[in-house]
Structures are given as structure tokens and as C-alpha cells.
Amino acid sequence: MEGSRAAMGLVVMGPSGTGKTTVAELLGEQLGWTTAEADDFHPPANIEKMTGGQPLTDEDRWPWLAAIRDWLTLQQEQGADAIVTCSALKRAYRDLLRQSTADVVFIQLTGPIDLIAGRMESRRGHFMPKTLLQSQFATLEELESDEAGVEADVTNTPDVIVDQVLHDLKLSGESAPTGP
Image 1 (cartoon, rainbow, N blue to C red):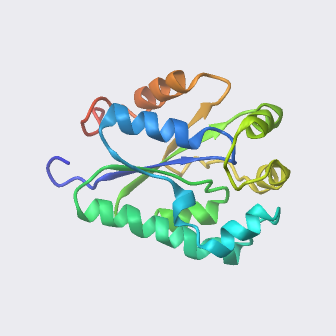
Image 2 (tube, helix red, strand yellow; image 1 turned 180 degrees about the vertical axis):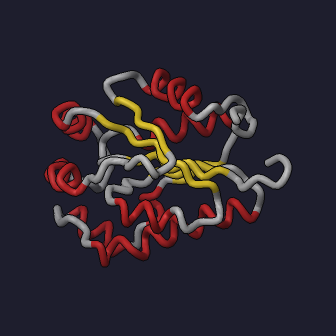
């Protein structure tokens, strides 16, 4: 981090199966930033619920989102730019994440539900069943004009998505934002 700017906290968001982890890992490699997987912040009860095919309630999500917010704040306090995956489907969830002292910017991964469902079918070892995908799309509230962020179409390859995000956010290498 240079000067006194707040560390940036990128949140790669979207429904399950959109490629959040892949995009976050590639961005982390390109930028040399710390990355975290939001699934690692879920308490066991949330994972059990989702594994059983039950969608989480807002009450289930608030402590999980607060833990992610607190992780972003910790990264900011340590002067580290960071990237975290998080579905962040509702505006209220993103509002809570923005309470971090980091400069939180969202990367919304978008794409057709059929493509994403197909990806989920071929994925192994993940607790989120494909049966919950429709509920995630129904819950999704698109980024609004007053929310810092960019959209990326998941019909593109992960490398193309990362290049687009880096360009749109004026980020490169292991540096701070290069734009005004």
C-alpha cells in the first residue's frame, strides 16, 4: 500500500458456480494480493444447512458477512490489499461488507443460469447443491449505480474476465490503482 490510501478490498460476487474462486485466485496471482474464500468463514451450521439443500436465511448470513467484513478490515489495518469471494447477493449484504475500513469494490460475475447449473453439475467436493441455484438467482440484487464495482460476463474464459476486471478497475501488477 502506498501513501495513506485505504487498502483495497475486492469482493468477487455472484451466485454459486459463477467462478468466484477461480477469478479471485487469478486476480490474487496477477496482483500479488492476499485472497480468501468466503466459504471458509461459514459456521458449521450454515454448511450443514446448505449441504442438506436448505437455503440460508438472512439471520444465518449476518454473522458470516460480519466475519468477512472484519477480515477485510484486518487486511486494511495491516496495509494489505485483499480479495475475497462472497455471493453478496443482496444490497443489504454488500452494505454490511462496505462497513469495512478497506476501500471495498465489487466484481459481479454474471451469466446464464443454464451455463452456471452445468458448471455446478461437473464440480466435485462442494457443499452447495445445484438445487439451491434458482433461489440464489431469485435473491440476487444487481449492483446499483452508487455501488463501487464492475460486472464481468462468465461466458468469457477466466483469463479474459481477469484482464477485463484489471482494465476496468485500472489495476496492474502488484500496484495500487493506476487511474485517477
